[in-house]
Picture 1 (spheres, rainbow, N blue to C red):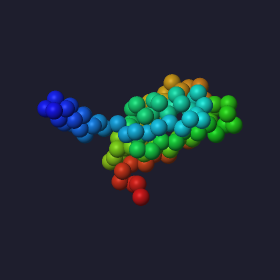
Picture 2: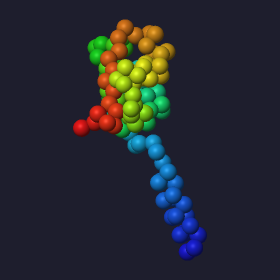
Picture 3: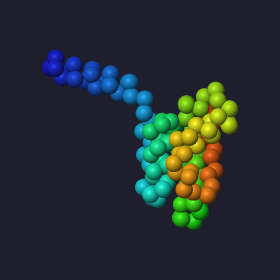
Length: 108
């Protein structure tokens, strides 16, 4: 019984320190969308993330909407710079990128 209690206490402690949100990527993401989604999730631990290939499926133009604590206190320009830095390699192979960032202070 004592071992069970310690195990429960340990599992509660583990959960309380977990900072990664439980975003589940949409099942219908293209390969390019999934790559961008995974990179942004790993870097920013977003509370909201939407990645869409808006080029008709050819992977030339993406629209991204991302909300993250990482953007708190930063100007919109600096928030966008952070996102484009993470996606530097992917941006080299596409024609366009539309980014909308949301920081905690601007969420409604």
